[in-house]
Image 1 (cartoon, one colour):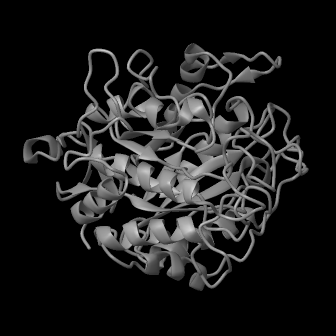
Image 2 (tube, helix red, strand yellow; image 1 turned 180 degrees about the vertical axis):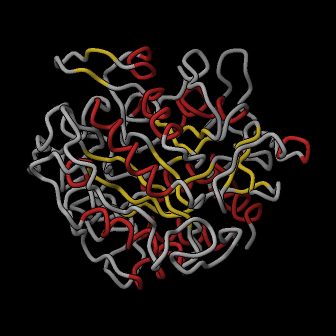
Length: 425
């Protein structure tokens, strides 16, 4: 089943016309929410682009390979390294199972308090554990998004991990800059690694989102422009992923607060069970931006419509709608989440052998329909694309000394932390 056929089948099931336009995705103001047209990847444009070894560049609203071919990312999210320095059930076979579904990218959540040596929660083996996960993913044929998921609102080691209070903060802070300086230095020679600067910003102004400033909680946020610059100052040309406001759902303010730079994708998190993130809000929230910039849904799902922790038809409908809308707008995506956490998490798998849940079956079918492995296919860790010698990425340590004041950001999971009540991640 190819991508177009899958989208048409989903559209038919949802009552959409062949153009994938209906009352589910209405026009907004004086604009029509029609299919997004691809651009970019011109031969002339490539000569002026900066590309990390083995990686990608952005041209218009399109992600392009180093050979000038349009590329789309479709995959899954892999949590656990945000709340556990050793991760949970991470193994080479786990990543091979994801790839077996047809995923060509995996988003790995991280916690800067485990990474930064100045933190009381610092783990001397954490960077190596993250790097091992990256290697396993690449060996399975997938690209990797390193996602800064959890943080501490400016106090190193202040990430309190309790069931009711996760470590998602309003925004990144000054230690996030240190985190990205170090991470980018490790992976600057591996273009198959993308950097998602901050999981789910919320309850800050667009000005603070872009440039930083004092938050309502009395600590200083670092802006996306500062985080982006930390990556570039480390010499990394890798793709950078930047989430919007309202827990990364809202990208409507990007045109007026655009991050200056290149090789930038913008991230959105459409979740079910929340009216302000439902289908009627998608065009204004992120659909319109697909016309000018690459957009990736780095989380989506519905953990709010469970019935006694059982999956309901409403969940399947929502997940199908998201994928159909993404296809119509050429949006990339990674689905939440490859984790055995139950309906409320929400989870794509019901056990660690990769048995799909009902929404997982929809995601699996879509992934298999794309038939899009990473352009270079499987790559042994430490070879051809920037991984360092000895099978790992050179410099995968955090021995740069104390990171100074502050912490960085991500959000909790359903059942593993707090954050936006309408989301799982």
